[in-house]
Length: 306
Image (tube, rainbow, N blue to C red; front, top):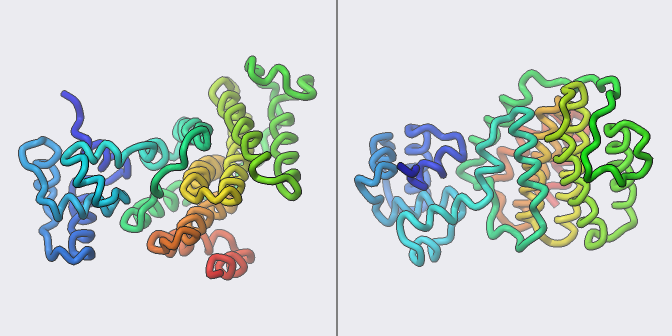
């Protein structure tokens, strides 16, 4: 039996039945629809298809996931829930592990090849849940020491790369550093396709690597590349695309043990929201990022206020 789209959507944000019931009830009240009991049984009945949520409850769910009321009216229940998932499950539901980070990077490497996403992945009601995931992922913090470079089998896609006699990690590091330097003088319209292509190549390397000694470094380089893609997307005026790249980069950096980069990307998510005049999700993200960023925290806070 196929899973109900509401169950898929709830699981995509890592929410249990009781916690999701509380999120819906809180949104219902915030929207001015009045008090709604936060019962897990209600969510279960909706997911089993035994009952259909009242319209105000549907609008509360839509509010959680940034689905316009017009979409709810146009598509009806439960079809509009399908539109709510889009690419979000690939960014929020994946585990904070090497495999999860690689899968998220793979999702990220596809960004920018089509229209910009219509809405943000992390909505204001879900920001606290996402921050909890992030804090758990970086709780044991501290950078992972750079591994001793180990030659990794080079995939076909990389055999035309410059200086293929060096190991893949050194090649990837040189590419990332070159892109970051070019970003100071080359326009985002020119550099963005190159950065996105390099991210795709790094995903291929991570997927093919059979030596786990290079994982932390490769994930760190992939996180830097995804973060660069986010900044370039900002330059192109695509805030929702930038947000997704920052989410991808934050996960990869956290798994690599690079807490400061991960926190910077978390702040980047907040900045993406602020650019579009949607500050609701920004505050919990910034509150989580600032303690990790240390001395750079005050400057970042000032920049986000501008």
